[in-house]
Image (tube, rainbow, N blue to C red; front, top):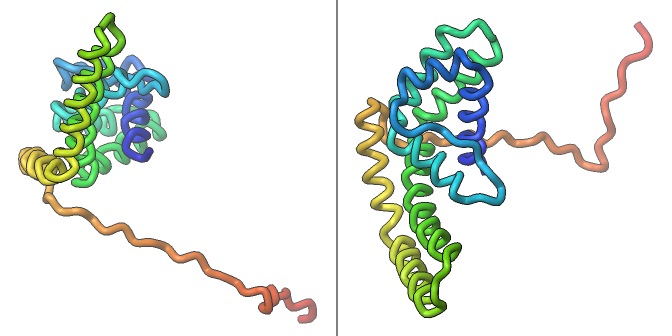
Length: 183
């Protein structure tokens, strides 16, 4: 959910202003960011594909937006998205999700057309076999591709550890601190 949330935030930031969109199109020439849809998975593959193959250009566009905009919220959002795009975990996720969505999208398109049942079954079986194979060696392949992208962007290909904040727990037998009433 976080991964697709980042992609949606990227689309919202870039499409909310003609100035930002102009900066974006100055950097990203081929594929463009798409909004995510809950029901149309093809929108997801388009959005992931654009970032997957042009992540450095997206980063450069976000840096320019952060530098050129007068809107403090847009500047903050652009800087936060820059840090997300530089996160190795995000880069691995974009490679991983693109591979999976590409396979699923092929079958989805085929099933939406007029196709014989036997052909549809064979297509589904090929996809299931691909997913089972991807389960065993897909992460290693995604990791290798992500390292290559990270090296091109001068990002250290290391997963950052997130510090988990512990919530202070109060026990039922403990009373709340009461304010002192007298001087």
